[in-house]
Image (tube, rainbow, N blue to C red; front, side, top):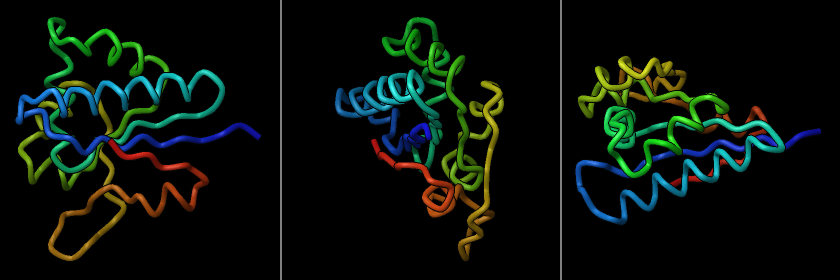
Length: 126
């Protein structure tokens, strides 16, 4: 049985910090590595839904890694989070599927981390 890894990106690119860049860079590197011998998924959640629009820029230092990950790894975004944090356009422009299984009160539905766990994923957050 192969391993299943879900990498959840929560960091906010709008801070412009090395911390945020380090988190997304390591998240993408972990997803890429996990896909080499198993199944991997990248979930952009919370303010992390802003990353796809930023990473789409070929001049961004993590663009090449992002492009490689998108070719090999299922990439999704929390629909409710994208809406709340103004990231729907960037997520859509990158062709990233929005998921909203968790109908938490007061939301239009956000991605379900509990569903990932039930589906056998090891969940890592960045």
